[in-house]
Image (cartoon, rainbow, N blue to C red):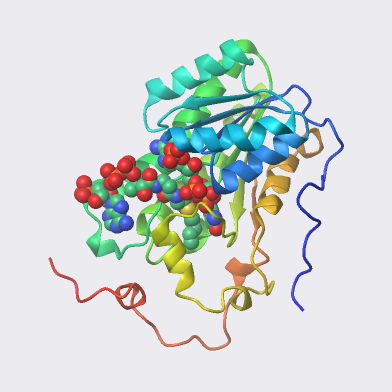
Length: 289
Ligand code: HXC
Ligand code: NAP
């Protein structure tokens, strides 16, 4: 049986107009889960700012979000670059107003045995996932501290922040940093009215997954059956969780990371199956220095 399916796409978990006129900035909001999150905010009346690098992703955000009613501003931005982050906030402020919700959704990832990662491959994933998240949070924090106004941050994470992530050493280490940052910033900025939470999606496949993440999934023929929920997650379930955390109904929740994964990360077997190395799981030959 497994966990029941959620209500259909388009159903709302919060009252209509919960985010009327609220400016919400979603990094990486043109694809996958970022777009699903932005969609749920837009349905509840938010004015959306989507920031990412690729014009085709920004165009996809505009196409998906504009029909939902509110204004949508798309801003080219590489979140690794503090100046580009500041420029994105400048544009948002000038055209829609200072965002009072920031969803740090953008991240980078690809499967690789740790020993195969070049210094630049490691640096790239950590730079986007952890440093980019910090730079965006810092920009929002500084502007709200200066203005004396409240705000809410949701950092999208991954459950291997707690467990380690064999095959994803760079991303797992970066996501551990992202989770830790939630806990630090929530305490530092709570006195200024800034709430900071984390949101961890479980396995939520979507049409925009990068080829190597998709191939990684396709290695397991029984993807849904390997989850305690006996199903995968749906992007809208991540969108609903994000809107709740940033809504007035979640105001006393801060410094928390909410895992939306049907308990998959707690799964353990009574007896573990034989160990298969990451190289073998990825079909790589022996390590060649
Ligand atoms: C090994 C790789 C690699 C790969 C890139 N590199 N792809 N190494 N395997 N598949 C190496 C390159 O060789 C290079 O090192 C360094 O990484 C930087 O590569 P660039 O292509 O120059 O980087 P850049 O253009 O900045 O692109 C970043 C990227 C790319 C991460 C490589 O894939 C990207 O833009 N991804 C964004 C979308 C994404 O990753 N989404 C996944 C989120 S899903 P050298 O040494 O050659 O210079 C997610 C799920 C979590 O996080 C849970 C999953 C179970
Ligand atoms: P995705 O579709 O690949 O989205 C990643 C987004 O990040 C893209 O829109 C990309 O846009 C943006 N991005 C990447 N590098 C950037 C940079 N340097 N500057 C600005 N934007 C950048 O992946 P997803 O599956 O939706 O993942 C979204 C979030 O959920 C990530 O934090 C991921 O770690 C997390 N997550 C996903 C799953 C899952 O099952 N899908 C599971 C656990 C955690 P551009 O290419 O246009 O820059």
